[in-house]
Image (tube, rainbow, N blue to C red; front, side, top):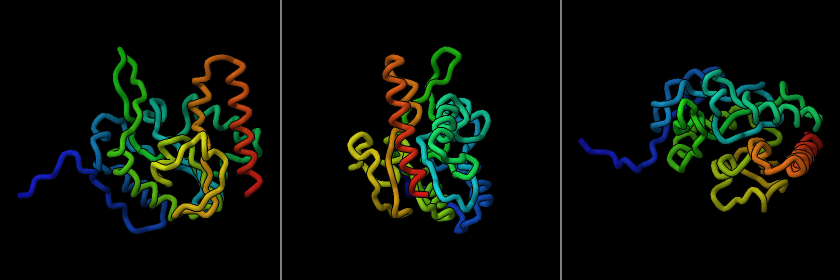
Length: 210
């Protein structure tokens, strides 16, 4: 029997369907990379199947991993607040992540976020592609470097390309901005206010395209 190269990216095979409920159910059994071994569960996207806008983040965090829902932790709460200020109804948007399992490392009794690598991004990409092909959004927003890399490739730079409207294989109007978790890492209150204002401005530009 031929042995697989352990460095090789394994790829999942989502069912050929545009039914998000079927995709969500199938994704629960995904074992295309080792992340499923230490995560609580697969965290699939959520939102309307005909959403005009899709937001793609990096991966679920600790709270999302436990709850099984994307963008529910501190960064997700800040994201919801920014959406409201920008005039975007989160209930009418679809939110998901490029990687569907929580990658973490232990720190005492805590589980700390660890950035996903190429293997995890590549293994999860078929599921993200299935979601985006099912929804076919009018506007696609990539939050942070992992999401941008998954959809647009490694040549994209978030700060350099932020706010530009460009085509992708999934949506003609694809934009890149920062991930809301970056707002939580600002060094002081003044920086936090500025960064948050800039993020809301990016979302207002999205709202104008809907």
